[in-house]
Image (cartoon, rainbow, N blue to C red):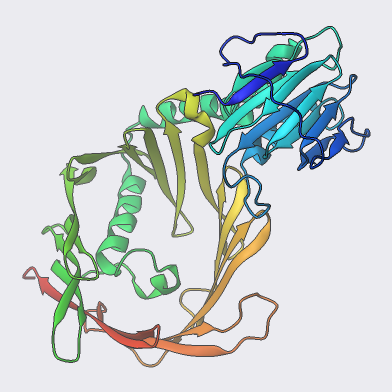
Length: 445
């Protein structure tokens, strides 16, 4: 049966939208019985028992998420986010919240019974009871918008944060995308974005960015490739630049040297307006010191805003699902400068922190920290040492936490040519020595 939650009542009752199953005999010897009338301080009960009695009094909501992995305590369910929404909207004492993630026989004091038995498949639903003997249990299938479900039954106006944020994000994005004001500051942020793509291997190695400054040489092409001892070349990236120093095309390759992407850059009056990747087009607008990228990803629209602060490129992005029934998947990310660090927040939660020493002073020290639930998930520290006008050495710390004693281990060397462009990158990864070379062609002076 499609709907696997059966509602069995002592007196025959019917709930619209739910299929009925014949009553099963209640298990006898192998079940526990637990009273779920929580003490005032216990506003959330984690249910792991077979039989549950719910007494009258406090309103109650069951958050049901049952599947084949539900009984595994190591599995984390995102019902926690709905718990947090309910607590935020209704407080800690006004509502009893019960998570159910295994077969449970629920008996309410108003003599209604819910038999949650998904028969090996998955089922997600909410069940609400006011706690009053005269009121019936209300059921809604799904695993999101529990706040709206409870608020509707309580006849109050409450909304989940992701519903509220969706309106806010749509308004902000509409305002951003209505602008197209080009100033000299627009040109500065555009060049900063383009130079990062032209001059670095993949545009993602923040701990090496001090070495890749704006280049004044008239680059025509840059070809990045792995070079083996026998002289075999495996392409990584090929960059084409027009005579005005503006990025024209980027081709990328996988580790086997097979093409896996091509981006073409389109300009109007010297300003980047589109990036075309196959059948995907990114539209670009400007608002003074901001560069605004808009992408349609099919199920979602992504808007990313770049700006310069203290010569550092900062990013702010919105991902908004096209269908509002998936608004819980919307996200907002923003980078901020605090001291010598760039902090990245996703949905207002600290996600990563990147800290660097002054860029023109060597050794250059860089620290990366990622977080999960407020705790450090990953910590990495690196160091760049200058070994001459055109040679630098890179080291990684052995420490996995900032408070640990550290030993810097040699990783590789970066060598630059007479035009101050990366020429050779030698490094050892997973005990394998590798070499990346870059070949350039230039426009005549």
